[in-house]
Image 1: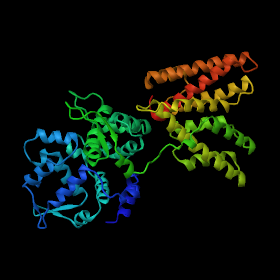
Image 2: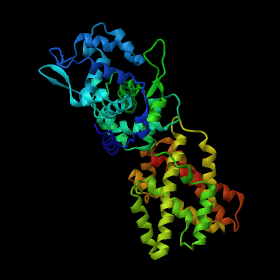
Image 3: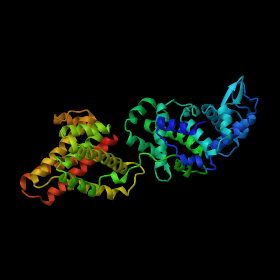
Image 4: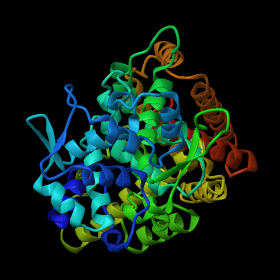
Length: 471
C-alpha cells in the first residue's frame, strides 16, 4: 500500500491535501476506524459466512451495533431490537465502507479479507484512518438514506469538508457551511434546482433540503463517525443542528484557499500602488484598473489568471523590461482583487466575521484615495466610468439590455431582489446628485465627497451581490 502515491492521487482528484505529519501520529481516536477494525478482525481465515441476502451474520451485527459511536447512531440501536444489518447503521456502514476500500471481498457467500485488507490490519492507526477517509469519497452516501441520488452532494463534499476544516473552531450548522458554498460557488444553485427532489407534503424549499441531505450524508454518516466533527447533543432529541470540527480534522487536512491578508486591498496597499504607478511612469488609471478588475471577477471574466494579465498587457503594447514590470503589476492586481472579494463577501455570509468591518472601511477609504478628483469635472468623469462598469455588470449577470431605460428597469425589477434594487436606486441617486453638484461647483465640496463615497459604497455592494449570485 503506497500511501504517498495514494494520497497524491486523492489530492489531485479531490483537491484535499493530507498532512504528511498526520501519518506520524501514534494513535487516532475514531469510532469508524474501530468499527472497521473489529469487523475485519472478526473474519476468520476461511471466511465469514454471510446471510442469504449477503449481509453480516447477526452475532457480528450485534457486536458492532453495541460499539461506542455517535449520539444518533446509539439512538438508532435503541430503536431497533433486531440485529439485522439493514436495520443497524453501524455494521452496515462498516461493511459497505470495507468493500469500497477493497479491504474485503465475497466468494461463495463468504466474506474474506483481501491482500489490501490483511496489509491494512498491520498498518498504523493513522494510515488506516487515511485509507478509510479517502474511501469515503468513493462511497455513495445516499445509500444509507434511500433518498434521491443527488450527485451534487458527492460533488460538493470535498469543498464542504475543506470549508469545515478552514473555519475557526466554533459550533455552526450545516446551513452556515452550505451558505458559504453557495456564496462562493453560485452555480451550485442551478444543480440543486435540477437534482433535489421535494416531497410536497413536508418539503417546500430545495436549498433547505439540499442542506438537510448534506448534513445527513456528509456530517452524520461521515465526518461525525470518523471523529472529524463533534455534534452538539440534546437530551430529548437525536442531535442538535450544530457541530464543531475536532483537532483531528486540523491535523488531517492542510488548509486550502485560506485568505492571504497581505493580498487584500487596504488603504496603504492602494496608495502604495498609486505611487508605484507614478514612479514607473505607467500609463495607468489605477482607479479604473481596480474597478475593471472587480467587474471582471464579478462577471466571471477573470477566471483565467494568465488570460487576465495577457489581455491587459497586450492593450498597453509594451515590450522588454517595461513589459515585465506590467506583468508584475497586473499579477498583483489580479491576486489582490481576488483576495479582496473573498475577504469582504464574508460580511454577508451567515457566521461571517464582524472584525472585517473596520478592514472594509479602510479598503473603501483607499478606493476613494486613488479616485482622480483634481476638480469636480475630473471626479465626475471617473464616476461616469463607474456607472458604465455597473451597467456592464448588470447586463452580463442578468442578460438584459441597459440601453433601453424603461425595459432595463422592468427587467431589473423582475430579475433582482428587493435589497439589490434598493442598492441600485441609492447608487443612481448619488450619481444624479453628483452630476448636479459637479456642474455647480468648480472646487470639491463636502457634499461632493459624500456623494462620491456613497456611489463607491453602493457600487461595491453591487459587485459583492453579483460575485456571490445574491441578486
